[in-house]
Length: 149
Image (cartoon, rainbow, N blue to C red; front, side, top):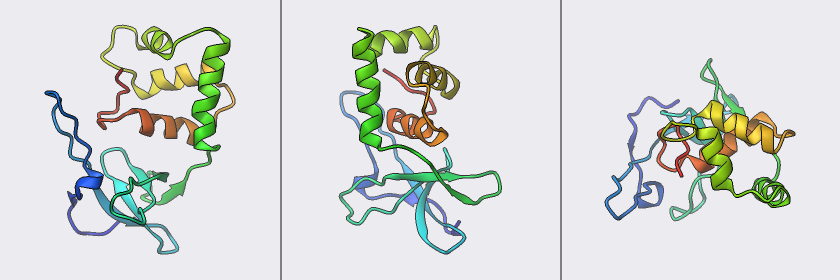
């Protein structure tokens, strides 16, 4: 990881929501793998992203920073296929995601990673660890570690 401090990213990297929702500043730092290839790291979650080609693009998930500080690629299926598979499974069972979400959330504010894991493994049992991480990153829009509905 580079030694410079995390700085605020340009607007393309700083999602915010109106309507009284508190703005969330997403701070990413540079990190490189063993071969020297550069990526972006979310220090709060240890998720590693490809650097976008254009400043208007969102970074795409590449992998994770492991406990030794090494960049590790995720193994995952086609990301659009994951959401389509979840949608098809829920439709086949005549379920809405909100209902399944509420069942696994229990009395908590949102789905924490273990609850999301249980929900996804129950719904799509052949997911890889990378698939599970991808769902967590894509559904945790405010970066608090919880999936809120």
